[in-house]
Length: 178
Image (cartoon, rainbow, N blue to C red):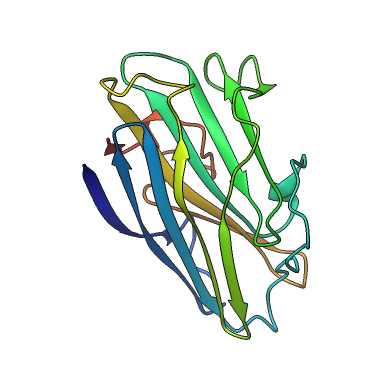
């Protein structure tokens, strides 16, 4: 099992007090992760928790936790979007931003969410990624978050930023090997 603790960095320094950290691990073909976002939420747009989470598009238009998985030595990768509301989606790409399709081999993304005035905790006890990769295939992982402020500004957070502009799809930023 590979287990990593992480702390995300903004693409550019921001005047808002935000901290995003967590951990991720892989056990066979189960992916386990936890994000913790701490901030003064009076400044941030954070979606309210929904009663029944559902697959939704364009979650990145507000605060959204993201995770990118790529199979080593392959151009194929997946983008996981998980809203603090509980809504989610997974997209498959054939290559850098090419061939985007909703990934239908995973039909649910069970997460737990805890929210209070200064913190959101979101995670999963295990997503079966066996439909995406064999348990012996090495995965390259990027952990990211989009944060939207109430004034409409965005900040982009990741383990590593590799481009001249925020771009979570750059494979050079898939820095964790699992």
